[in-house]
Image 1: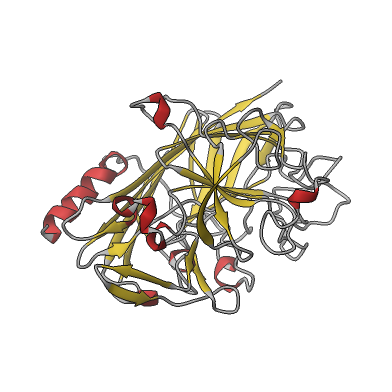
Image 2: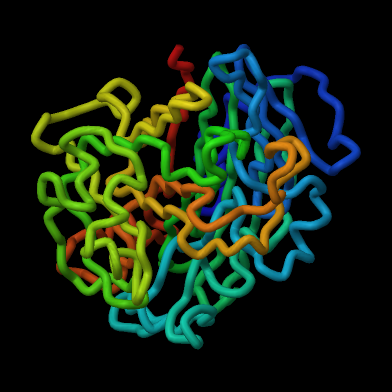
Amino acid sequence: MKLSILLSMAAAAVAPALAQNASTPGPDKDGKYEISAEGIRGLFIPYGASITNLFINDTHGIERDIVLGFDNASYYEIDPVHPHFGGVPGRYANRIKNSTFVIDGVEYKVTPNENNLQDTLHGGPDGWDYRNFTVVSHTTDSITFSIVDPDGKEGFPGEVISYITYTMTKNTWSFKMVALSTTKKTPIMLSSHAYWNLDGFANPDTPTALNHTLHLPYSGQRIGVDNILIPDGTILPNEKYSVNDFWSAPKQLGANHSAPEILGNCGFNCSGYDNAYLVNRGQNGPYDWRNSGPVATLASEFSGIQVDIFSDQDAFQVYSCPGQNGSLPIKSTQGLEGRKRVVEKYGCVVMEVEDWIDAINHPEWQREKKHIFGPEDGAYVLEAAYVFSVNK
């Protein structure tokens, strides 16, 4: 497929955002771009095409900033921890076993960056959420970022051009991620790596998110992993009433923290969640992801804030922040007077819409057309909508 055709496809994919010509200011004093709609406003930065703030009014009418991040855009590049706050991990999200994969009989080695350089996480040490995107379009309710990822960067074959569009409508944050391989077959899998605390760290009873209630109505299965969270090829049942059962009924993230089997659930000697749950909607026949019901619902009784997540993806990663240790600050827009202004263990939850993780190393899963893209293929596309409401 000619490059001109590929770029035309990309332009069509982001046309709704580019077609708007509303005049908007540039970044604010902290280097952030604002977009908003009724009941919702968010701030974004070019670094990693990241969401830095998301404001929703809670059950008391108080505006809460419910995603993690830093106060100033300049800190993202110098933060030594780099927790992937709000960015787009790419060109391949999550983990790649042994930092290798095979395409058409050719083995590729990408740059390792995790577990003593045993595997590659979120695209490597200079993955997409370590880089500055270009602001293509910015209106009052939408912003589009773009990046050109060169052939050979981090060891990945071929050039990839990507457009990330965030849009606000009434009580809803939506995004569309489009990526085009222009020269060679290459793995592509993207996601949003936003960290959530629906209380804005202002709940007087707890600084954690363990009181948040999670429901994954389509996720009766998860991908089995080893002690360093690399898929081992198994698909595991989330048996009813087990620690990974969020499908049979909503339950709090901390509900099973006293159960013996929670230890090791998120890796070696780790208690909590860092799991890829499958989204099984096939039995319902053809469906429109926008109307088939949310793949996940997260809610807090304290703030009353609820988010229903709609996605076209077939997996959903949940990370309950067991690795946080108080070393990361919360923002000036968050917190409770008299409490330490840090992210404590279990202080957040990451919810990543994506496909089956590391499927490039499991051909028996038959996910190749959702993970490997070349110039002759169509664009990689991910869409999701986060719909907010307040429970009184």
